[in-house]
Length: 214
Length: 401
View 1 (tube, rainbow over the protein chains, first blue to last red):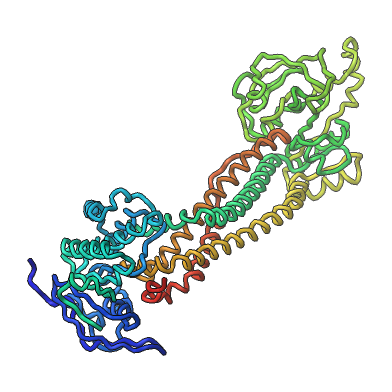
View 2 (view 1 turned 180 degrees about the vertical axis):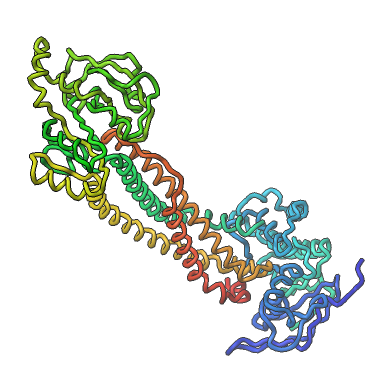
């Protein structure tokens, strides 16, 4: 086991939309190997926080450091590379490349920015997520549940340091909610990735020790 | 996985869009390459065939018709001239060679030309078998005729009157005998059966029993179709045609000038078709632009997703450009092939109608320039279509459903 280090550390983080709402976020301090659940009602800026943490939008004030790298110091190009290598994203709406098959979506995610395709990893992950029989299907031909599992696979396939998941359980019934969270935790641990989940779904509270309420 | 592969899959994922863009591109490229090739090959074919002669002297009439019939062997002659009247040409100091030609008969549609050995030398024709003709009714056979009719040295045949194979009148009392076969030269000679002048004269005299007397009787009135002239001195070009046209019952036509005039007439047609084709090319550029613009609009979320995978803005631009590039190259290549297919098909037509086949050549300079223009349009279309990529807001695009 690796020595514990500071995976995510934020300091007086603020974000304001032009002519829009302004958000001030509590400081986050997450050690490697730990998971974090961020809870809060709709409209409080959860998705905004997640996008700021993932470097999709720059913070207006304050600093973020992920695995020792200060995101504010990175150039646009370096930020792209950093995100591609160290961060995984699982979106509330599923986003895939529709012209590609399931397998090609998975290997595409591995190809950038490292250009190394690990076919064994892609197939194993697909097998564990029950997608093995659908590898050569177009993503548009998948069922809802299969799309959900594919989006989890895409968040984890490149073994990122941290995976941000946005409302991963919002459309699921109780049984499936539990299943998906367990799957997510299990795969994150296999990939040695930390999970940061933001949600308004109180059903998953019991699965996580670290919690933060906005 | 490379961006090229992704661009390719994106391109083929919308077959109808692809088809429309390709169709326009294929249409314009095939039209331009076809017309360019056709006019180029026609021009070089004509130039090659008229090169040996500077002037044709024949019966009065259309100078173009005289050139077409006597030099290119595609039209009917303007009439005959008296050998005697053309005799002075041989004495002119400006003239290097004056070769009389005469015809009126065919064998299975191939013209039988009565002339002198010098005619063969002018086209650098070489025997592949046998000997040259020495006596009347001996022929040497052009490369294509020999191949098409399967003639061999020693074969005999009967000619039919006129220049078309449909003629029913045959000269059965004067069979020709094949003395030699010529190697193909790529000129009009390949499509001729060549004999001496006497054969033509004798075949058209009637009453065999009086042949000898007739021959003497007609010595002074021997007719030929025309005399083909090569100048020794450019001064001849200035003086002789004018002299002939003004002072004799004959006319002098300049093949170079007449063919230039003919190509000038064809040239305006070629320009019109090229203009139309270029307009279609512009429309196809526009269609590529619209198709890329649509691609970018429809795939905004995918492009944003690729940014989260670590792709830079420049890589997204490259992705869109590659899609346009594949489209252009595919369309161009297919259009080029179709153009060549058209040449191949047209070759059958020209072969049957005029006896000249067309050749299939590789890409030439003008086609490479056309490719350059098409690529330029693609680059422009990509740049114009992809301005929104620079402004892509990843966060907003990905959270909008």
